[in-house]
Length: 421
Image (cartoon, rainbow, N blue to C red):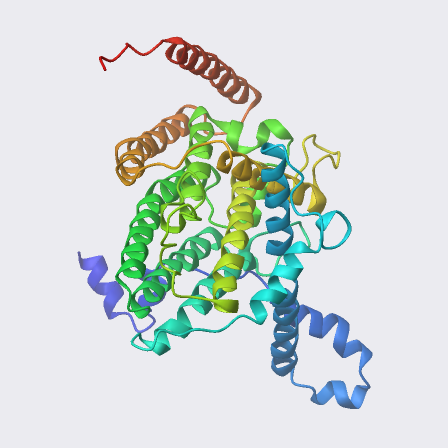
């Protein structure tokens, strides 16, 4: 106690340095500052370079990159929408859109042009300000997530040392946009749809965050680039195979992310087969398109996060070989998970609300806590990643998959007892 009082009485005592951790949003120079100092200033005349403000150049470079980012990334949902229409057509034994452009590749672009010219309706009795603001909140937060996702070793907007924390924080704001859209529409159906959507998103954020915590416990870092660097020794160093508990955590994370982005079988807030479409019922034109673009951007974002956390990120399958590595490998793995989401949409029926909540609160959350406990015990037994620990983990995963296959096959083989008519 006396030492503590002496520390407080010291003239050099700093509260922030003594009690709070040193959290730097980014290590070293900002990438925009490096670009100004290493690329722009050497190419300017010496008289201009000596008086050129680096801060102004940094801001201009960041604005230019943000403009390119906003201009390019919305094209990704256009491609994914067309891909989903083709995938669904394949599942249903038909051709899909074929009229606009070769093989129908311009159909989504034509739909976007149509939405540009549709009537922009605003409910006269609604809250005009919140009604106009809601789609931009959801759109901005959906695309702000990409700033912390490392697409490759050189394609990374900001290397936050709390990158995964930033992603979780910024994606949680989407719930506010959903509630704003439902409330401001002055429609009971929109309000009920927004509350149902908010309840679903908030509920499934819990097992999703707990699944991420198992990765943070293993890597001991919140930096996305450090998480990828810990998986650089080939496929068996990927965190999905590092322990049996992270293998389970991957599936909980992926299924919870499907519920986060309101995809089938968790698409209760936006059920297309119902008369009322949920929180965006009263929206039309490009404001409705913003919700649609944000949904498909979120699909790719959660798939990219899953690849970064569990499937090696930009690292390849074999150490020293660029197989499924770099930027192309990262995109292929992410699109593979997106295709799996589409596959599930056209395979499984929609859940009821009670089934949706039971799955989260009665199954996923307890299993996620069990994964955290198991990961901690595994870390005490195997403090370092070795060949023995990886072999034991893969053997347990293999035995578990065989047992799950046997149990599932026996369950599906049982015929239900006939019910009296």
